[in-house]
Length: 76
Image (tube, rainbow, N blue to C red; front, side):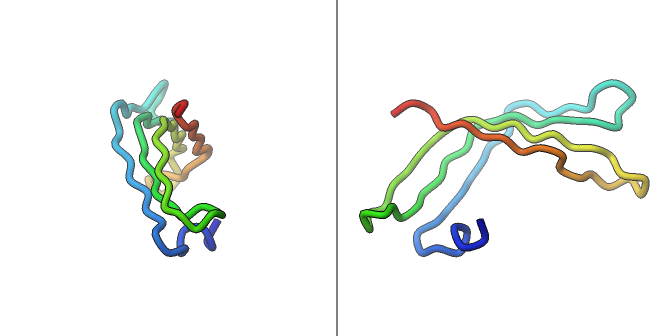
């Protein structure tokens, strides 16, 4: 994935629409929309939009750690 992130033309932006902690506050999630720009195998710049959900778990030191980060592209 590091190679994709450093590729010319690559840009990822996201906008959270919902974020909250659940239960006793040790697990939380964030959902929203993303937009990605990338250079395809054809050498042309492409763009895709979609939705994501990221799950966090609170660590002993109070920081958060991503447990799962899942995205799905919208239909073209």
